[in-house]
Amino acid sequence: MSDPFKAYDIRGVYPEQLDEKLAYHIGNATAQVLDLCGKRYAVARDMRVSGPMLKEAFVRGLLDAGVHVVDVGMVSTPCLTFSMHELETEGGSMVTASHNPSQYGGVKITGPGFKPVGAGTGMEEIEEIARAGKVVTADGGSLTEAVTLDAYAEFIAKYIDLKRPLKIVVDGANGIAGTLFQHLVPKLPGITIVPMYFDPDGRFPNHDANPLKTENLSDLRQRVIAEGADFGAAFDGDGDRCALVDEKGEIIPCDLTSALLAKYFLANEPAATIAYDLRSSKVVAELVEEWGGSSVETRVGHSFIKSCMKENGAIFAGELSGHYYFRDFFGADSGLYAFILLCNVISTADSASELITPMQKYAHSGEINFTVTDPATVFDRIRAIEGAEIAELDGVTARCGAWWANVRASNTEPVVRLNMEADTSELLEQQLAFMTDLITG
Image (cartoon, rainbow, N blue to C red; front, top):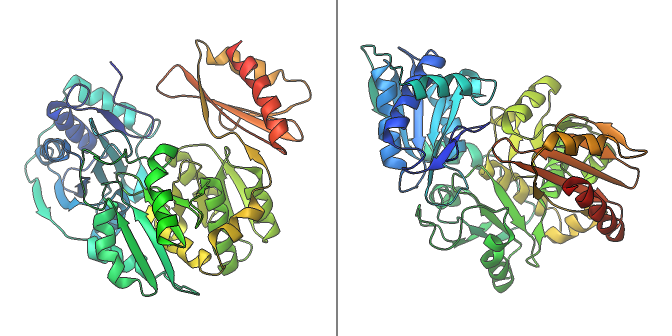
């Protein structure tokens, strides 16, 4: 059975892999590892069916350890992040399984200073204590409730600055985004929202809440065309990711969305530093330089991206998975914040496609998974590619002039993930066959 303790969070099938007993021990272990006794700590959940049970058990674990828990209710992960700031807590935990299918439950843990807890930053210690059932108890734990949704909507809405009115179809995927938009829409003059699947329903009756899968965008693409909308936006279950389709219903790759956001920030803060994950098209760095900014590559994963942003003083970072991170949002990600800024950018042009088409200079494979028995051997083969410039920031990247390829190992499966790009579709097809043979042996 798969281990629910992942590199960036905790996620497993409920109740087989993650049940109330384990959730209690994770809560108590979190209090121990983050030294939360006597301190205020925020907790929230998304709309999953398992959410109320797992949150109640997790909170009990915190309370027994003497923590002052502030329950901010059913909100998005970014709203929880905002709540940590607004309520001045020592971090917070979100009971969610993000974009996973409905049978999953999970927890995302954040420590003081908005520091994510993952591999190398406390997750191993939490797992060890939780699995061993080592419970600490202390008097003085308390539970209070706070409502921050409207304050979060106010915070986000202040960034709206349209050059023309927009009509936008929003697919909430029966996740938490629909609830957020109900608070936000009255604060957005000039924007007409056409809602899709706004009712929170952790069974996801219409499609999975994962906007990276093409099949989950099918309804949105059709609705954008039918409504004559300016663009469409799709959110994941806990509202921290956002993906776009243009006015023609064409999917906008998330790295090109990152480039749009980079354009916004560099127009407002010339010479700023923009970070992007190493799977992104090389056009992102080229455009950042063209627009007068500095670009820096990052490893994949929120803990690495947040560290990279801090080290390089980056104003913004984009990830191919649809996570967008902002210096002015506590160094964290927010699908809704990204949405508002993208409205601003798209309103400066006649259409979204007008902005995107010039960026589509290269052919990108997207992420392709291969099941392998020995990732180390695969990496050795890539290092041996003749004439390649090799980098090992995250997995192994081979740059070969008119094409490049990155191969990374999964943290949880016997899988390697390939991303590659070439100057032409023909070259991509040719080199993809070469890389497939190299990986599969």
